[in-house]
Figure 1 (cartoon, one colour):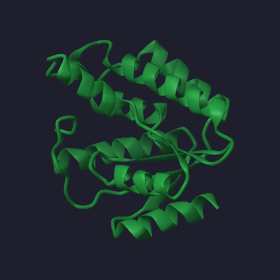
Figure 2: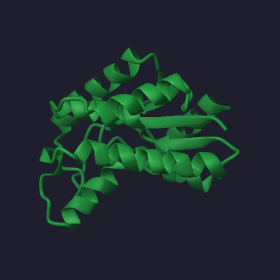
Figure 3: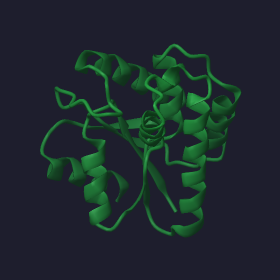
Figure 4: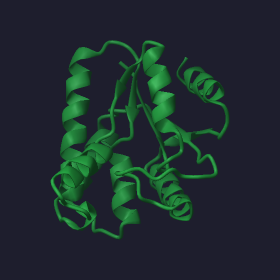
Length: 178
């Protein structure tokens, strides 16, 4: 079962692309960071990234979701982000790479958990703030560069999914995996 990562900066439109892929019949594995942030917010933790367990909680949830779908899926799977994204987030936040994160990145690369071709959804020229997404457009551009560099440094091949109509973006992703 091939697993393809769909990634990019916050607010780039990954979720819309993934929802359409899911409606088209593909298996989609949700990202973990947004859910960890949302839970922290519900628990009254306003700045979860300052908690030294933040990154490891993301990694743990990602692994659980990955394992659940790998056991059940026999078709193409799209992953909304990966541990490589979590490594990029850690670097962007200026955090030291936790041992758990380092092991998980090493594992997914060594085991070929994901295809090496990654769909990199580019920014749309703006970012809409949400409860979990509180990054400015300017900061999202910096994060996009860190994100891209992290993937390339680990040997992944990025296919740009440029800004544009949703149908065009989805069609490009589907051509990449065909």
